[in-house]
Image (tube, rainbow, N blue to C red; front, side):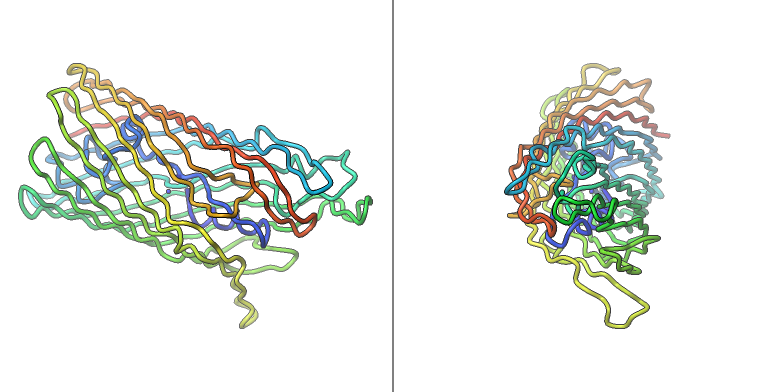
Length: 418
């Protein structure tokens, strides 16, 4: 959420209105084991192949081939309450969110004592909201802010290929390339009024259905202090993506592409085996959202018809998490974690995809069938803060509302070492 496809998140939150700005919902759910400990230390723990999503250098810790296959269900609950202009209360929607199924797959292949390679498919970002019920009230007699509310669906898949190299018993490095495919749908429409009279029954402010690819990369470092303590560092480069659309229309004008700059992400993770049975892990992640400064609409048919759709004032954000892993016996392992996830929106917010600081409370277990295979389960309760916001509609002026976004993640994973 905390990475759904940033390309189509940007399409969704921006085309709604020239005055709208919002952050999306990041999916910190690349594995069931990681989810159980709030993704703490996932850049270095390397207890299964899912470490590939966070730090390719950690592949150097594997002596045998490893595979992990998992699936997560995110039950998202978004409420948008008391949407009001200076003169009218347009209503509320307590069920604007929707659930998402998020699969993942990882494979790591040691080549020799120095080299390893890996392949992965996972999702970093995704969301689904629908606030159109507020704008389509058939009993209404006044204009609703149809440019601020509507349906948003985003899905993304990251395909990663990486290699690692071990210099010595302490230091390893890794490099990888990310191919990101995303699809997104956005509608912003509803009745258009002149005074108290409907003049267009279903006026479209925006109608977007787009898909595209982006290519980025990741570099990582693993430092093994000793067998019980290690630290991992990674930096993910995100490119500027040009998304092609089957439909990219705003106020009746069609465009071919949307150009979107994406933020880079730095992550530090640590792992410390405190006792024979208990290990402590932690993560600090920094996302350069300030680089996401503007979106540009591109029209290949008319030279010079490219326009800046939206300027941004987003803030760089931090994520901090801490987790514990306890080996109960040879069969069972338990995990617990906490994450503080800082919202990325500065002074401006959006009705369509609420953003705020979030607290994650997580837990999980693993059942080890034997020394080579395990079934992992994880759960996370995500709680966002209530946000009181004001957003400007081109149709009704300033609009106020109270929004909140919560979620519960359920994750299951099977891991096998050959």
